[in-house]
Length: 320
Image 1 (tube, helix red, strand yellow):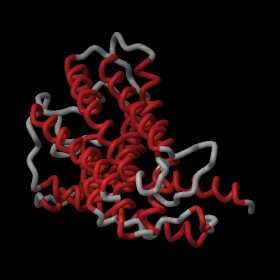
Image 2: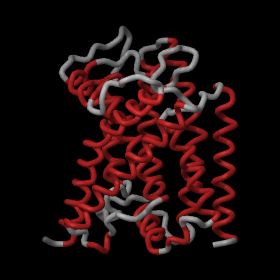
Image 3: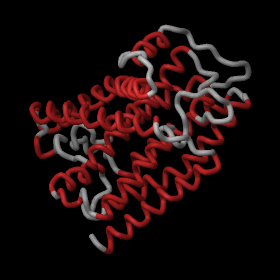
């Protein structure tokens, strides 16, 4: 098997693993929260059951909806699948024609964000417009932080591609605990929490009109459209959590130098599943013991994360 074919197989395997694991991760988050709150919970496989149930239903469109209501769910799902292929979760290898560059990844994130915002606006409902307004405001503060945080990590490597960044931290473990690296990872983690609509920025389990952001934008979606939106959102959560986990604990990722062969890929699959599950448990535990911020306090949190990312960039150039 040629090297290029191995890379394609590795990327396809990585994408399949993320798609299969994303609903399971959401099940872990819900189950951990349920246990901490003294409830039995619905089980780890309930998100998969919900997807199957929704996929069997014909979507209904609100009066006044346009083609956006049909296209936006596909774009949200497509951006999630593309992120699963681009971001190094199982392996750092990737096709040369499909670069996992920082700016490409952030652009793909932004496409999904805008599509979701347009979906909330399309039906013309008050809740949808309110959710889209909040969603895009948060995104305007999050995307620069993601850019700066990952750029700070790219300075020691000399490349803005995510694969070499992870490989660089694997080759030099000192970068994991370096001051600039710690600041960048903390800023990125805060941005990921905001990007994926988790507490303290948003509560994914609420339908209160005064607090919801993500749920307000999908109220008019149903059936297969809602399944596509939910799976796309879960893919974004899984990929970004896996990225943060690989930056903090880079060991186990199959590198491009490994071929990548099947043994290295098998280790990479096990490693990313374990690391992402642990990250999910920690995130869900933190959400139970943390209150949601008031809407007007969210910009303060995101501004703080931007400052941390800026300090990380400065530290990367000054300290190295």
